[in-house]
Length: 84
Length: 190
Image 1 (cartoon, rainbow over the protein chains, first blue to last red):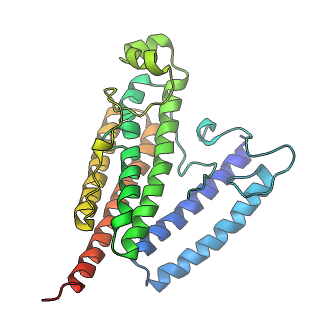
Image 2 (image 1 turned 180 degrees about the vertical axis):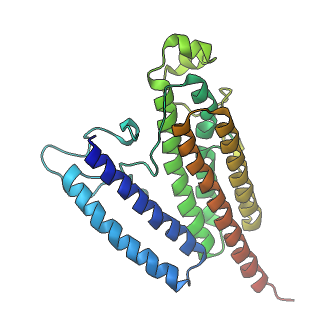
Image 3 (image 1 turned 30 degrees about the horizontal axis):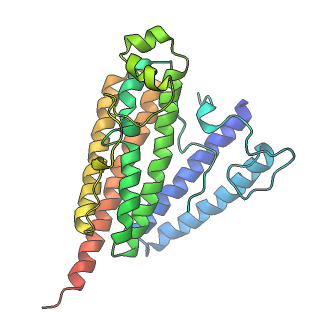
């Protein structure tokens, strides 16, 4: 995986983690409107970045369109990536 | 249902192959306070939660634990992958090698296989949420002992992330418990 892809992947991981943190918080604070607004804004940013990443590097999850041949099985898998 | 995402939750970094550390770390894969136990515990307890907040938090944390299981697997895989047979024997993993080669199996650091006896499902939301809070504290302590055992700054960075998640989960379970108590109190008529 080249530096550019790794950099974008790490950005995506960080943004998705932010969304998860808000998600868990909102499970036990469903009426916190300010947190909900921030959550919605991060979800929007995440969906844009995810689209860009997948258009460039292939599917991250299922129900995504694929170029030929079938892209899902392309390596590296997550445990094979050197993150340093 | 569940959907796989082809990415880790957090970068799983390893500075160098280290079989001894893999032997210690595998307890977070298949040990009593490990990530498999955590995920299985929460995902099976959620069916008897009385409030939407508790159903939600057990579902979501149970799912996040699967992401942690994948991080632990990646760390063990990287620590073991390029190890020589001599290193494996020296780390006391010769018996593990005989059964699994370098493959990943759900065991604790002493080779004891994972068992459902590590978890409880009482059907009582107060009892179960207390168990969950204790489980998070035990996992936090395990990560601290693992960080003590490791001299690899890259590995420790990933372990520190996982340790911090235990603290957040403890907080969220505590809030869910409070909500469940309030709900149960509101149902009492004398």
